[in-house]
Image 1 (cartoon, rainbow, N blue to C red):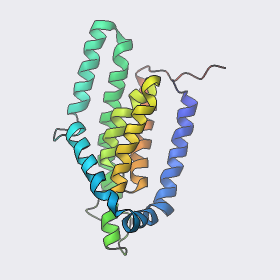
Image 2: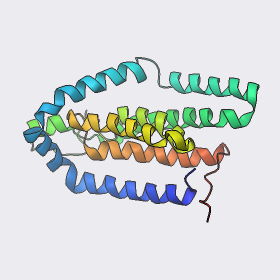
Image 3: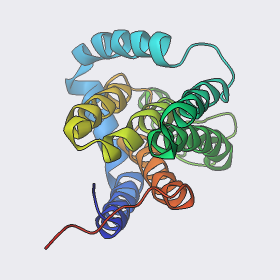
Image 4: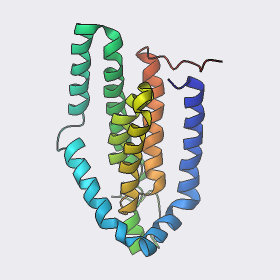
Length: 208
């Protein structure tokens, strides 16, 4: 399992990526993708729509976390708390990440990339009616996949790869900037660290 120290270093690095993207990289990258990678839009959108139907159907934000928590409770009843904690952590991180990202969208009011490339004179942040930052879809993917990825070493890289592909598809289709998906990843990681401590999921230091 990754150490707490390494997770905090990863969080600091992600925060730096979010700042770098938001201040300098996001808009040039969005324009570059619009001009040179238009062929990616249709397959990326098709992939995202498919994942949305699978992972994020039209249900309340608390529905998936509740179902995951109930599975954890059943496992606790059958096999003890050690079996339940990963499910409870995933449920808690997913719930906290989704609600936090939804709230932050209304705070930052960021213009989406496809709106920017259509009208480059638009301001980036604090434009009423816009909600690009952070990415809501990425909040679901990372909230759902990041906790088990960190808790299950054998599945870590496949789960992280799937989450990253889902997040980057949102960038390729022009609905989000790279900074938007990085911000949601950071939020999910911070909640994983915090709620992991609350639920007694230890992030042990690596052995010497």
